[in-house]
Length: 213
Image (cartoon, rainbow, N blue to C red):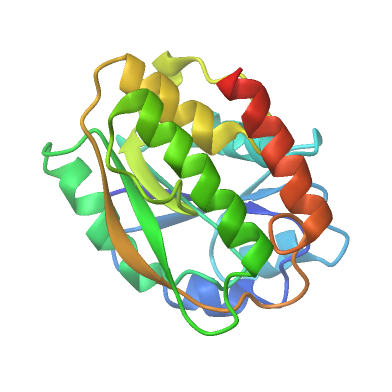
């Protein structure tokens, strides 16, 4: 069954809920990206394997997790409590069964879960992705699944916020079957460090705009 890469930067408050709800057969792999709140120790206490990545950045943490993983299918999921791990099978199963090469979890946001500035930025970005690829995607998604060796072969280079977009663009270029399934999106636990803030959203937009150029 799939391995679940969880990029982590100071998520000690959210990790117990996330790891306790990990479905049977899904193995958590926490990538500690420089936490100062003991996130790594919390993850280990809940039975997760923990690796560290000193290069700061979402893409850097995801790539480290991909390299450290050993299962055939790998999932990537935010570890801030905004995504319920019990929704992992709906994203992973089509990949495990060989029906889809890259499955994304498209956010279905509850009240207060997705700030307006982030939602608008995502809407504009996805309109451009649809225009360029012809894919019917509505969200890059904080939850995704694909086969590990195939992902490694894509040779993803972005180590910051552009990682999810680069994955979709290169997978499309390689002829992958790509789809999305809606997943509930709830308010995160603790303070957001990226798209929950205006500054983080601007950084993410900049990273992704560079890829589109």
